[in-house]
Length: 255
Image 1: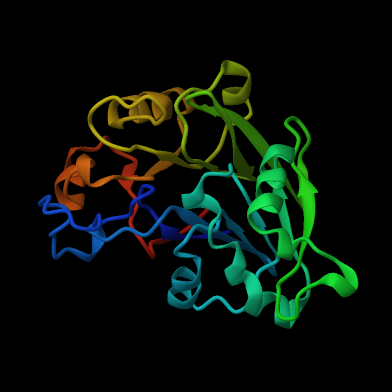
Image 2 (image 1 turned 30 degrees about the horizontal axis):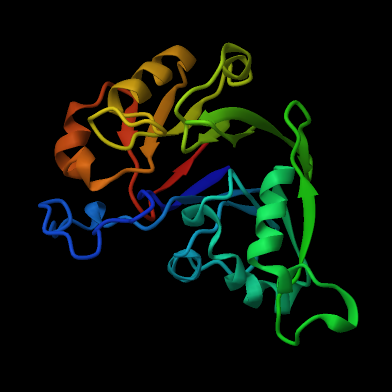
């Protein structure tokens, strides 16, 4: 399985528009972060988790010519607003499968009603999707792989993470209960959000992320959904425990 980090930034990305913060002015390409998303590839399959407003740029940069579907973690704009940019995939492949909580599917239908129209009323050139509801404790069959939803909380908002075999992706987490942690037993690679150094009401900070990683005990862990307030990539990376790494845009790993 190959994982490509399409974006590792927070909702504003890095650099933040108009900011003179030193990290936003950094010349290090690892300090340039698009909105958070990953591409997961195995066998002949290719799935994206979340498609935010940088989706088009991310697909071009990664050289992606086809996808088998998109899994959504939740409905916030930095995770969903690139949905219209599935058009080139739709023109070649037909309706694109999307997977999300029932609540998130409802939000997408409100924001992109023309995508969900079928039949003669559909606007020419509009993309189309096949919608699949994600329900906690019900694995999703993607080819021969069973993808396990992981139910977490983003402050008071429910969010899904996903376990793809030995790889798990959790973003926008603040809390997770023991039942859901047990679903992550034995994973080799964990990706989890670490927004900044200071506590935040709806995201793990670095200290909390490291505590969660220690509880789950993967072989390797990567931090994502990073704001400029976490610090310079090079400096933060040096302070991380063994086996924990700061992800960056376009990083590719194998599991």
